[in-house]
Amino acid sequence: MKRIHPRDNDYSQLKRKLLFRLAAVVVGSIFGIIAFYFLIWRGQGGDFVVFVLEKFLGMEYSTALDVYRRVFRGHAELLWLGAVLVTFFILLRVVLNWFTRYFAFINQGIGNLLEEESEIRLPPEMAATERKLNAVKGELKRRTREAKVAEQRKNDLVMYLAHDIRTPLTSVIGYLSFLSEAPDMPVEQRA
Image 1 (cartoon, rainbow, N blue to C red):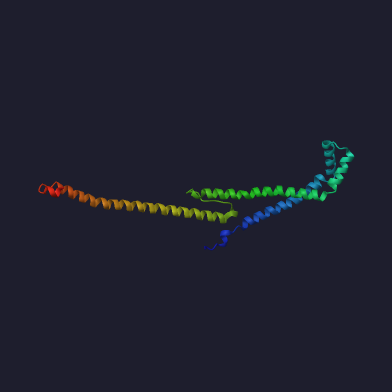
Image 2 (cartoon, helix red, strand yellow; image 1 turned 90 degrees about the horizontal axis):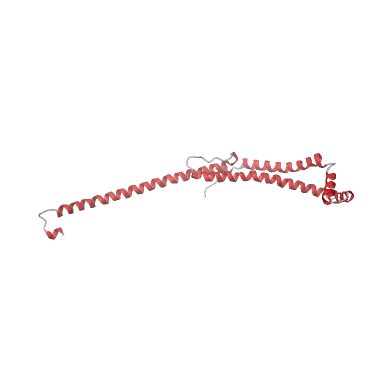
């Protein structure tokens, strides 16, 4: 079994980038919700919820205020945790979309395996995969070259064998024609 060299699996740059982005998602979620609370919600959020309950659900002001206090104020921690989680998953989706681009790069590199002139290029954090794909490409080129050389050798052998077989047959046919045309040869020997 071939020993794997550490640099062949060196994805430390990719790991760092992914870890940084995930940490940014967590921190961004928390700070985004905190900023939303202090800049927009605080002092005006309750009034907005009561307004929505009045206008869209047809409640009276006192009923809407009571619903706001029991539902929103009574479960504020859960609502804010839910908001953080929703924000986190939205930002996580953005990070996953960014991460899946790497699969598109790999697919493009695999597509370039059979193209003769182009060398496979991937982002710097995927240098190990780039090296492996270029090594596979080199091996495919080498095998193609060897197959062409073997095919040429086979064709040359067939040509030489055909020539070697044809030359003696031509000689035998020539001798038989010469003998059949000889005037002093008896008829029994000509047949």
